[in-house]
Length: 191
Image (cartoon, rainbow, N blue to C red):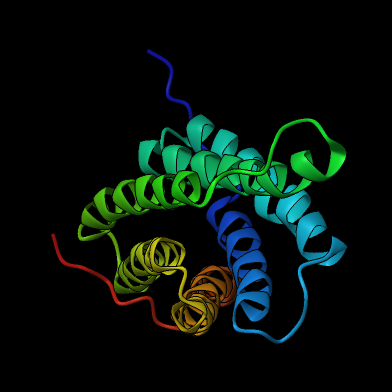
């Protein structure tokens, strides 16, 4: 019998930071601070998208089903969101109807809500990330459904909070590992 020891790094901080930083930047746009442009689209493709897909593959190698599903899915979410914006501009497909975007955001809200249930066995920091992300998807869907700019702006501020919670969670994991002790608490959940 051979025992395999895993000496690979924790990929979760990379995925959390890719998600968190991209989420903050997109939601600064949603809150009305600046227009949607190449900076957000580039972050969506590379750091929000590709980095999270890579993280998902790394989590798979570690045997972490939750991390695999979450990071790969949200990486592909970012890539699909950029495609929804760019494809109509390139003439590859018509712009998604408002009702289609409501359905898209609602499906992501449902998916995220179920993953939130999974975080109840993990740590408080991840619980906050997934709770605020679930709320964000439903707020965005509601804003599109009602075609209400005020809800969109409010969702932008809520999304900024969600993104910063993910950034905190990722950086806490890095700092706690580097220092070999709890520098930034994650709120351990007892089994």
